[in-house]
Amino acid sequence: LNPTKDPTRSDRFSGEWECRWTNEKELNFARSNGLFGLSWVRTYQSIDMAAGTLNNVLEFEQGGELRVGSTIVPDQADGARFNFAFNSCSLRWRSVAVPLPPLGRGWGALLYLDDDIRIQRDVRGDLLVAAKVGSPRD
Image (cartoon, rainbow, N blue to C red; front, side, top):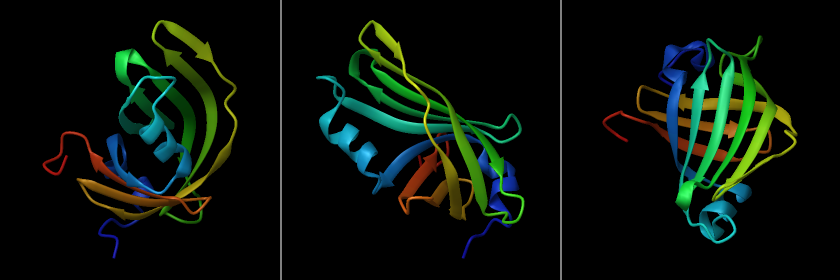
């Protein structure tokens, strides 16, 4: 079903990806409730496999932001899986920026990847559908 062989090793995986749908409770909570009175604007990921970086960003009104940085590497045994480990976390609310402890590591599996759409499942079983920013389907 996946049109991309070994998708975590494909150039298609790197780029900025806008979250279109997820069942991840934390992301949906932030989307519904905002950040201390600031409404949610968008959720995206910036992935650079060559550099080994993954940034998860939730943007809110008035410059509010939750940003979690990670390392990311393809799984050695499975070309559809990647491993990540959080290495930075920050929260910005209006003019106040607060560093937070980066806690967590895990894996994700790319169920589908083409030039425009990415579908993945993570270690907790959460699903994510993302569109590549700048693609015709964006």
